[in-house]
Length: 137
Image (cartoon, rainbow, N blue to C red; front, side, top):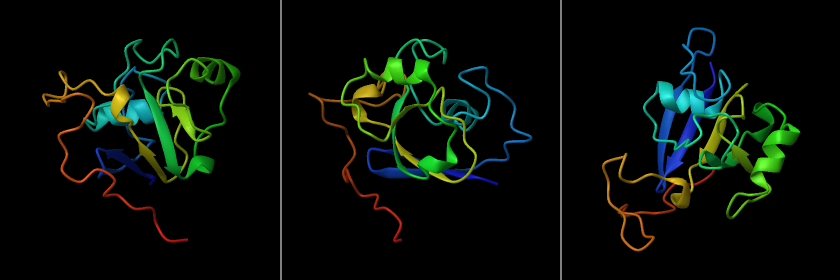
């Protein structure tokens, strides 16, 4: 059973996912990071509904990139239009989980109104940004 960790404002939100029995949320590819986020009420924005037509579900994979499906050309082309892309960037709607993954949801892709939180001049309300630390090798 894969463990998926979503890092939001430095805080880890860990979910253990039974991919075989998890219902599809119909947002993104079945078993994708977005699909898992929707099933576990993790706030991952997706303006296009998960159809690889925007970049609002952009995540940065911190660990376990090899446990995601390979990036297809349409995802790579779409990521070319995203802000602050890294070599570890993926679209949550396209990255299908196959094992344990740790990903960070960047602050600039978040929808603070839908999440019921507040943001002020580009700064999160979290007190300990960056509190999450990677696992030791």
